[in-house]
Amino acid sequence: MKLRELVGRLDDRLNPIVVKELRQAVQSKFVVAILLFFLAAQLLVAGIYLVLNSERRGLGSLDFQAGHELFSILHGVMLGTCMFFLPI
Image (cartoon, rainbow, N blue to C red; front, top):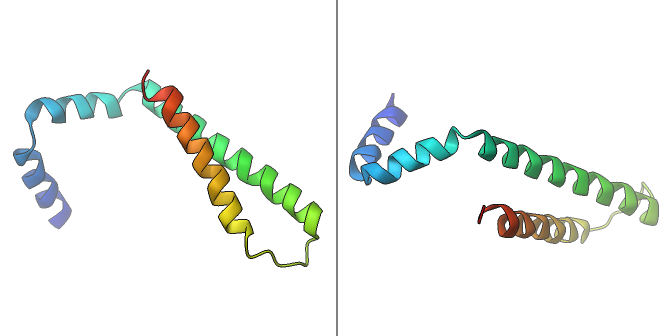
């Protein structure tokens, strides 16, 4: 119940027009489709990276830079998605 009270208080303090626009945007099928596309793209990129990285280094080896490299790649995917789909 605490969360509902907090959301209710924040809802009262925000601009009603902004709240209405945000609610309409969240209920849009376009937003849901973009989020699912984004998730699928991230899963695909992470899977490809892990397969290629395991083939290159072997399954038993440790690579402490793999997380940094994967984060950079996923950050690039997110940047591309934001640059193409947010203006739409």
